Length: 304
Image (cartoon, rainbow, N blue to C red):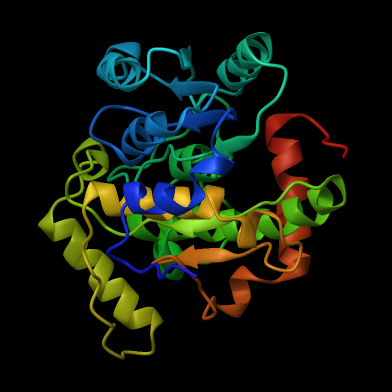
């Protein structure tokens, strides 16, 4: 069995799992150029998937990605679908467009998100922006350790108690909890729900787009130590964009994860199953409460 670690790139993953991508349909959110979603899509192009549907907010930021995919393999059906993740109406419209483009989705990679938005803001539907974009969407983050999910007050008293990093942690914790509830519902349908932490990369535009600077990172570090009972944190390894995409593709294509009902709902970190997830992010009661809250927030009941 091949060895995978933090240095594994998307190309490395495809050397071993390319057959699980060939002829498949992929939907990837957050595919803007120089991002993890874009790198994942471009890397996939070399192994002949049937369709790649890129779902993002601004088409002009995705054109170069589409061109790169077509240059690698002009036979791939690659499409762009516009979406605003801070608007439930836009999300529903995008879903309808995707249904027109394909009658099946083999792999959905919910990569889109924002990080530590400096000032409190809400979605069109009144939900705190990081919760709306990062959770009411799903790639995860070890940043979940910065905050628990308060299903009684996801909007921080309408912004009065808002902290950018606590809000980021809340949204990422919500992702893990959501995965618990989703896996419970989809397992019987033969669908696997997985979540991964692609690592921290300075090559991605996420930090710039979210206005995260050195002072902001310092705030996150202080918060993390406080939540770790004052103990120093282990060093955070930086990764390249290709390595970050490697984690995403490892999670999406590795049959030991995608075909195993026992592995799900796995949390993948550095291309291994993470076994140190905090108890609050694995609370089944909270997961079910969050599921019900989410249905209320989007105005729809989901039956599987």
